Image 1 (cartoon, one colour):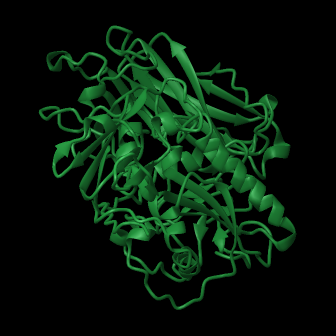
Image 2: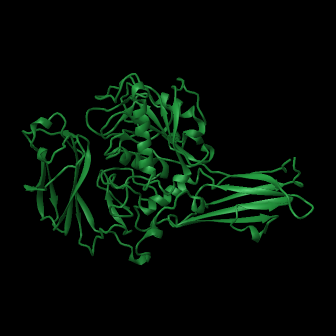
Image 3: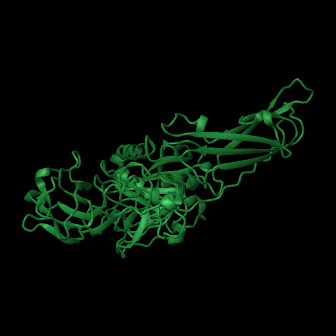
Length: 534
């Protein structure tokens, strides 16, 4: 028989985030005629597996579960699960294909790739009675009642939060972060207790990455025009330490500076365009900056001949993303040379009347920058970059445009956010998956017990090396408090009776500061008596 084995692991549970508007959408901006969500916002800010499982007034819907990307047991992983909405029975395969594409997109060669061994992705199919997502504030007869407030490509809301909550809770450890996937080909989403997305080819994965950044890392926005600025990617008091000081390109605290930039105009218009009257906005410039950027998003405009975008009457030469179709997308026009002092006009003119039912100007902003000596735009440069809120208050972010929390079209997090991602996930995951014990013979009279440590597959246990990632495990074995040197960095040890402690330290170049020892784990064992073979 095997010896008595005591196995102790301590895990602390993490927090997550529901966030606000701008490009993202308020969690609870739903039609009041529909039922309210069963949880408070405070409860929505922690993964489902770390909440008490409440009793719901509705039973969970039928769920067909398919594994998408699985790295280990749900009891020691962060589990994300896609729930089907607006997929009828005949669209079952389409749902699984959509969910798999999204999971592989965000966990493949970018975004969550380095932390993938800490995560599982699943898909849960429930057939809906109707196909698609509701519009005009009216849900269809679907599993979770997803709908758009109007026709604009922005928020997608849910009318049946209790059903979604029951579905997630019925899965126990398998549902940490529920994702409601609405069967609609165009841009849309929501953050909060349930992440809502669509399988839009151009935007689905972009929105999912961004919303999960909020939910998992507990960081706020980096784009201009929001109001939720907090977490490891936000800084608002220049007299205090910089949260990402360990990542600054120039680490000398006396050299830290604010990059010189200003936002003279921003508008979230969400307006349908017509051929009779261009949409335009006037703004003033101080004339004191060397460069400027015109940033905007439009939808319903698949051809360059459909729209003309002008600044002070000069055509900016807009062309749509090649495969965008009617979907929404974000565009940047970088312009060398500063704006003159005084008033300027940005205008959007619809040229193709056939697009009138769908063409929409969603958002626009103007940013002005100092020259390269005043504002470093080079990718990979870490400093203090100003971000301007909805009411034009200033906070600071780590990089210019390196982070998907700033630009949804960017596929990766900045270093400050990826460090935060590691630390957030490791609050809910132990580096130690478990331990196995077996009997072995020895030359001595007493048989020994073989202890085999199972670690989360990082470092040398990772299935495939990741380019640019340096990582290692350090394993230390102790008996009665004394280090057993011959077992250092080994995951196996043949031992006799005694009390054993195994300490595991993980190191990665993506984490420079670990104040709470998230990259450490410890297990204690008691092997009682000899190992008698049965």
